[in-house]
Image (cartoon, rainbow, N blue to C red; front, side):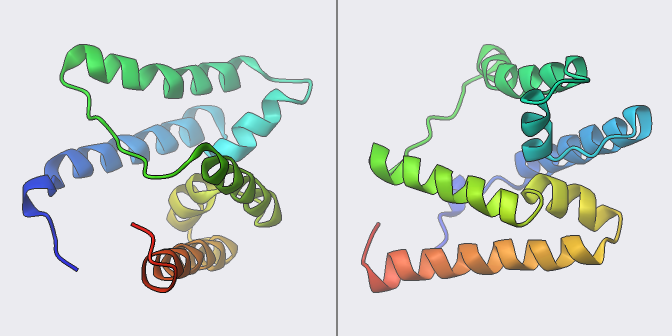
Length: 143
């Protein structure tokens, strides 16, 4: 394995991480809510407080366009077909329900609150990701 040093971008990654942390902290401090995306999206399907959830999801959807407007947007490349993407999305959704939260809820918000449950969930997310990449790249020979 080689590292593409020309694509290594520590400063934008740091800035993005700081912005995610700031947004999660502000949502907790100002609204008393955890910035877990699966919980926020799931709450849109239930009656109740939808306004802040719609604003949060709207910000998530609008931010790539704002980024593109301010500068050159990256061109992501996904080397998978629609079937693989749909299956992966469904598996992530099932895992999110089974794990009672997602990487943002457990990994960002739960770990910062020193939640043991979130530490176990985040370790499980990471282990599953490592295993998936190992199997896909080294055992199945995918790109």
